[in-house]
Image (cartoon, rainbow, N blue to C red; front, side, top):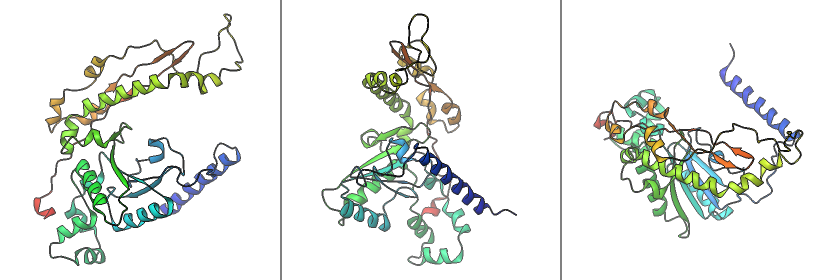
Length: 320
């Protein structure tokens, strides 16, 4: 019988061989020219594999420090790493990057207790008489992603071990849409449930930000990689025109806010515990296309996901 761990090890080693081949082909490089990290930033985020920090922010290896643990929570070991980053690598800014749909808030402590061996139970319960409370303290479970981010920010700000000049902010990532929401966006909502109710409006504002961004980089799009590909065209049509850039070609579509309304579901339905969030996730927001002389840049349709509200089903005694 083939050992699953060995299969996974083989998968990783094969991946490393592909990486080495890309190095040989000069498609990749392990070399980092800048001091590490390039930016004086440390990001504490969850261990959820959907959170690819470098991809989300379009960073390069070596640009920032990234710490991970379950629930992006402040711990003594996180403090240890943060102090090293501050005093040895001149980190000045810390970002707590939480995320929607965190598995840590869905853990049922009673069920988890039954999976622990005797050594784990003795270790967790040795400091108190209320074992479920000790379980919660040990695993640091929570029921609200926004409140959790705020709690971790407060713990960092109260940590006397940190220099007073260190600045700390929170962010919330949606792994289904790819959007990152700044602290100023979600902080106005006292609880995660209110954030969900307003999610359509919040997302709409983000779409407008994207449109503004595309307008800002329009010249860069025209004068950058797109035109570089067309500098020496192999074929020129009978009218002497350059070939169009690869990708879907479409007519300019006016950005109509009403489209967003048509492609979403009324906010009031979020209050219905029977609401089909999967159905909502499949709804599309139509993004505009940029019309540029001789080159058409098509912006693909973007799916909208409204995060699921997970109702607390366990008994109250489970957290007491």
